[in-house]
Image (cartoon, rainbow, N blue to C red; front, side, top):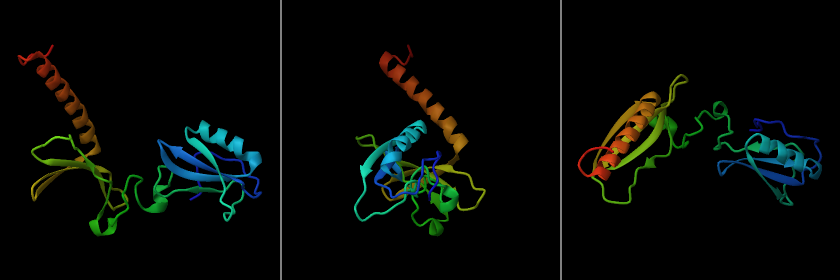
Length: 178
């Protein structure tokens, strides 16, 4: 794991600075540089749209200037190297027969008729496409609906429209949208 969407300076001298690379508040990689290349590397990282946070090196860590470690769970990781899509939770995929993202709960902070979760799923085959899995749970009963990403995209727009209509109707009080 040593690839980035940019090329950082590298002289091979002993690194004295570790630069943490962040995308959307997620630690994606660490780049190691000498003092001479630290500022230039941080500028390249910023041009790539990533945040850089230079920190000192632990005394027992030895890396050459230019060495990069990309974390396998980040968005910069190459999913082909890992065998998992970037969003996969990497938990028991072979047994489940599918990759699965972490479930997103639709908690409204008030009592609801049932619990609803949404997650991405994808079969293990090389040509499989991601799908959206909606799961509802009431007591011990559960039901799932799997949609293509295209269907989920259309559903997102339809739900937004219906919520806008419901909000307008609620504001009018007579069932007429203003």
